[in-house]
Image 1 (cartoon, rainbow, N blue to C red):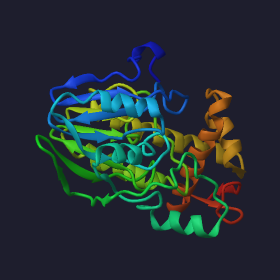
Image 2 (cartoon, rainbow, N blue to C red):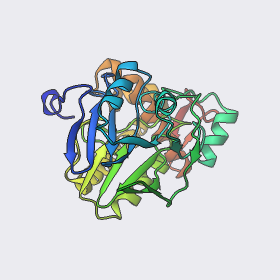
Image 3 (cartoon, rainbow, N blue to C red):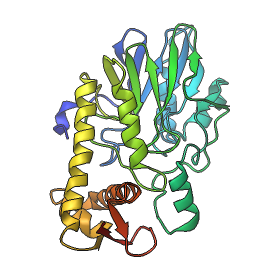
Image 4 (cartoon, rainbow, N blue to C red):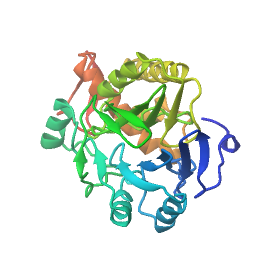
Length: 303
């Protein structure tokens, strides 16, 4: 994690990042959102608002105040339906008449195993889901969204959430919560899927990016190095979990307390969800198995 003074922009102020792109940080700082949600304004005439953010009237007014004479919001694009990214989409649409675009509702894009676990087991999860979210226009992987002076490539990148999107803009990519510079992403089954997360990392790594614009924190100026770190970080956590299980069967919460020994107590519940995501992934790889039904508080052992 970066030191806290490395990224501390003024909240509610549109700051230019490069020609045709501005960022407004929402007033929702927390241990899970860092300084707040990054809302991006793309374009110089018809503006795409990427991730309008939480249901905060002051942030809505900040977005509208950032529009210069002759500018109007033409698209409202939501990368995923978490409460820090999507709720302001509908109020912004009502004020501007622009449509809301996304991959789908909060359950869209779930993998088959996560869909099965959601239906059949007490898996928990559901942290921060915007259950009321529904886009006006559903986006498909690989399609292009075109504005007055910009275009975006839609990249379905499930992992953090099934309906998560990244958006390619030339050699830049809006990576939302999939790749951030200040922290790794929460992956909490059945909404998040670590197997999908790693596949999405590989998909992004196959492209030649100059910069990532994340959902929280500063721009990532070394995209491929950050992706390498994220993959290595997840693999090191996996190795630590397997090593801990060599001492005998146990559950995700106990493993989290051991594997995330340097994590503040307030973040251990999130760490437990990440460990559970690893355990589901390792079960799918036939490296571990649950002693009971595959569920949140199950004990696991090595196979």
